Amino acid sequence: MNAVYAFTLIMIAIAIGNIVAVKTKSIVSMLFSVSVIFVVAFALGLPRTIFADSSLLALGTMLIPPILVHLGTSMNVRQLLEQWRVVIVAVAAILGIVTFVVGLGQLLVGRPAAFTAAPPIAGGIIAGIQMGQTAADIGMPELQVLASLLVVVQGFVGYPVASFVLKREGQKILSDYRQGKIQTIQEQEGQENSQRIIGDIHEDLKSDEWYLAKLALVASLAVFISQVVKACLGYNLLDQNILALVFGVLAHQVGFLESNPLNKANSYGLAMASLTVVVISGLANATADVLVSLLPVILITLALGTIGIILFASLAGKWLNVSTWLAMGIGISALFGFPGTYIVPVEVANALSDKHEERQIILERIQPQMLVAGFVTVSIASVVLAGILSPMLAALA
Image 1 (cartoon, rainbow, N blue to C red):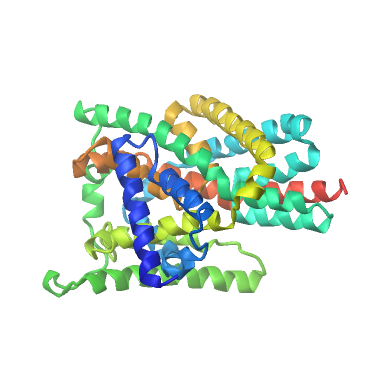
Image 2 (image 1 turned 90 degrees about the vertical axis):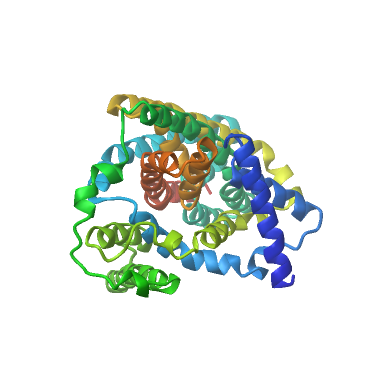
């Protein structure tokens, strides 16, 4: 497909998704709406190469570290240290998936399918690839397809649930803010953030490219260090995305980066559109026939996983004094991970208020938690779970 045509169709779909999200107060998320649009469009004959043809897929993939650096500039060191509760809640959610999908699920869909399904539900692409490869190695290609499809379709459950629970949390935050019970973190940390260790050029000399260059420099440093460590040790000890987030926090704290540099560079909208394409790109591989054949197993395992997540995350949240709605959101991040953990909070904030300050207060108290949760579930815990269940699946052959 012509690149301009592909770009145009994608932008129209995202624009429609945003309208639906705002009109429904984010009950129906933009990501969910866009996913439905493209599933239907592919069934009607839309070229499945549209995402690659538009060049947005490559752009979005490249922009992931810079976007994480951008997000890091809205956080501070104290925020990161305070996220230990999020880690525990996220791990509890993974235990819920294991309990319900592996424990109860094997009675309903069989042990091989249950073992195959749990890691992708707990995470994403890496876990799905590992379980799919194991299934192929033991001569169960249908389970390989199952693993891939779960990675593709789990967002259809995750996005609406996350949007719903985070909307409830956002409403509570907004109510407390309007009553003067809380203030923005930037106000709380104003004195700390105003102390610049590194100087900057005069305001008149700053351009969009200046902000983007500094952002890219920090992102490049994160990628470089991650690659060097991986080359030396032979495995990915320091994930580049996690480093990008941390470096964004530090670069802002010392004054090298301003807060929200993508906004200052007038590049935020295109970056978010590209990121959205990365999220939904897997839908191009889900044909109607394959979806129908594996639909019962997909529905059962996703339902069990969601129940396990909500139950265990809620219990952990109650124990740690974390809001029940937020705890559910933290747990459900396993069903989509980053960049959905970045985009859904933005949708919720935009749907709940049209005032910048109120949107900011919501984002400050939801987005960092969701981002950390996504890293714990998708980037770490699901890979560990796949490493445990993969040999167990192989042993069933």
